[in-house]
Length: 331
Image 1 (cartoon, rainbow, N blue to C red):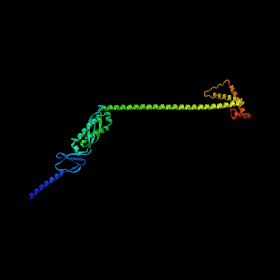
Image 2: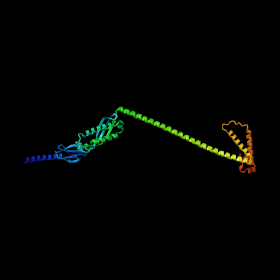
Image 3: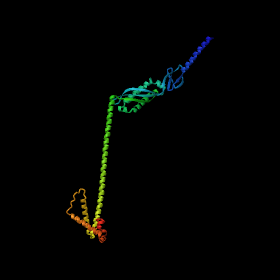
C-alpha cells in the first residue's frame, strides 16, 4: 500500500511539472515597445503585441523580437566625389522606426545593415550630383532628398525612415585653404566696392551742396539786382518828380529854382568827392568859387522861400524843395 501511494505521488508530481511547463511554454509576456513574431512549424503565424499573450505550447514558437521604438543608426564617414570633381568626406545619422514587425522580420535579412548600406549609397548619389558650393550651402536640401529616396526604398521592409541628418562634410585641406583665400578675396572685393561707393556718394553730396550754394548765391544776386533796380526806379521817379516841380516853378517865373536845382546837384557831387573812403587829399577844382556862389545862391533861395511870405503864398503848391532846416530859414 505505501509503495502504491509513493508511485501515485511521482506520477502526480510529473503531471504537475508538465502542467507548469505547458503553462510556461504557452504564456508569453511582451514588454512595451516590442513585438514578437510567432512561427508554427517554421512558418509565420501571427504577431504578439505588448502585454500577456498565449500561444500553443511546443507547437508555436517566437520567431523574431522586434523593437518598435524609433532607433538611431550612425552612418560612418565615407568619401564622396562631387559633380565638379571635388573629394569630400561625409557622415551622418539615420532615424527609423519599425511599423510592421512581420515584414521587418521576413522581408529583409539584417535590417540595420540594409538601412545603413541603403543610406550610404544614396548619400554618394545625392551629394555626387551637386557642386561643392551647393554641397556646403544646401545641407537641408541634401537631408530632404536623402529622406525621400531612402524612405521610399525601405517602405517594403515595414519601416519608416523618420529623418536623415548629414553631420559633417569635410573637404580636403588644400581645398579648405583655397576656399579661405577665395573668401578673403571676396571680402576684400566687397570692402573695395563699399569704399568706392562711399567716395562716390561723398562726391555726389559735395557736388549737390556746391550746386545748392551756387543756386542760392545766384538767387541772392537776382533778388539784390531786382531790389537795386527797383530802388533806382524809385529814385528816378523821385528825380523826375523833383525836376518836374522845378520846371513848373521856372515856368511860373521863379528863376531861382533852376539855381537851387543846379547848386544842389553840385553840392551833392562835391560831398561824394569829399567823403570818399580812399580820399586823403582833396583838390578843389578851378570852379570851386562857383561852389561858394552856389551856396550863396542857396541861401538867397532859402531867404526868398521862407522869408518872403508873400512870395511863398504866391507860389502855392509849386514851391521849391526845402534846402535847409528851420534854423537856416530864421537866419
